[in-house]
Each structure stands twice: as structure tokens, then as C-alpha cells.
Image (cartoon, rainbow, N blue to C red):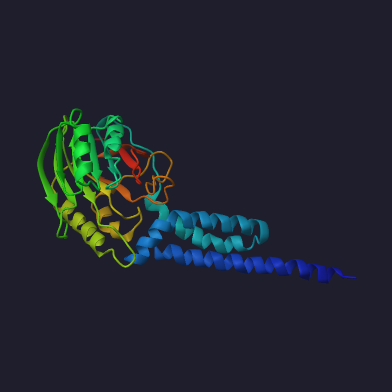
Length: 309
């Protein structure tokens, strides 16, 4: 016959084991969150996973509530650190005001054959400006054909293009420290005031290869810092998650546009978005709304941003 003390010990052993496992899991998640602040490949990978580290913390917290409540106090540390790391990418409420410029942007995925559909669907949003990146020769031609009537003003260089209802001025390509052109800068002559628009197609990131992207992002930050324009927008595929340390210099110069639809604005992959690598930054403009939407058959969702003055 098992006495009461023995029964209590038998019950405590699994709970003690569960508490240890959950505490270790919490510690490992804490380390993973802290790594998102480290510049370079570690920070880039961590930033992409950061929203899902929060989901993992939630699972650990629920298990702790059910199996080992004393671990909840220990889990407060990784939860608070995660919230601090995630804060710059959290959604916000849009500002009140009269829309001055609506801009949509999408990576249309080269050689996908979907540029025409993307162009048509983005034009149907009523945007004033459409920015497309990862254009190849064929997709540029079909996009120009689809948008020519509604967006008579355009400029394209390499894999990047912009179409506008309003006249464009001072258009120029940008290399941003690389030997080829993957960005442009134009002035959109909107009715109320001109707005400088940058469109970026950042270099790809692969394991062990992200120097080109980091060079472009730091070059972009230096370029906008020297730009005297009062109203400025930067859109495109940054190949960097919202909290990537490589974006810090740009955040120091511009305001990151937060989603206003109570989501994290994740854009890639379109079928089941895991991270936001298509970004919008502004200066001298307020964000009335910022959302994402599918267009064409791209593997990126498009961003739609309504800006006011």
C-alpha cells in the first residue's frame, strides 16, 4: 500500500520535470530573442523569426499554466524582452487627415508571367502611384502596357519601375554602393505638393551572403539623410524583416510605416506570410492607413499606403 507521502512524491516528480523543461525552453527562447539585436546574419535570421518566437513563448506559457505555474514568473523575462524587441514592428492606428498620396508597391516575381495581372489589380485600388520591383524585360513591357492609359507618367531602370497619375520630375537611378542599379528616386508632382519617392529592390539574402543587401540599406540611409525634400517616401522589397538590425540606420532617418489593420503586415510568402520584407518609410507625411493585399501570382503581397500631410 502506497502512503500519502509516496503518492505526493510521485505526483511532484513529473511536475518538477515539466517545470525544468519549460524553464529551459523559456531560456532558449530568451537567447533567440536577444540574438535579433545582433547585427549581421544572426540578427537578420532572428528578426525574420521574431513574430513566431512570440507564438512559441505563448505555447510555453500555456503549458506552464497547466503543468508548472511557478515557472510563469521565470517566463516573464523572455516575454518582456520579446515585447521590447517586437515593439518597433507592432501595428498602430492610422492618423486622421485628408489623403494626399496613395502608393502601392509589390515585388512581382521575375519570370512569373504575372506582372500584367499585378499591374491591373493594383491599378484597380485607385492608387496614385504604383511601384513594381523584380521586373524582367518581359514583365516590364506588359506592366507598361497595362498601366499606360491610367498611369501616363513612368520611369524604370533595371528591375525597378514606378508609374504615376501625376507628372514625374528629376528621375534618376541609384546604385547605393553596388555596381548595378536596383533603386530609383523620382519627384512625384502631386497636386498639393511634390513628394520625393524612392523605390528599392534590395539585393537578396542567402546564408553567408548578405553584404550586398546591407551595403544597399546603409547607402539608402545615407542618401535620404542628405536629401533635403520635405516630403519623402521609400517603398519596395528590402529583403529585411521589420526589426532587422540592418534597418536601424534608415529608422534613424525616416519613420517606419506601421500596419494599421491590426496585423503585422507580413508580406512573404504570399500563400502563408511568415515575415514582412516589403517595407515603407516616410518623412514629412502622416500615415492614414497601411495594409497588404494580394495581386497577380507573385510570391509577395503588395503594400498599400495612404499618406496625408
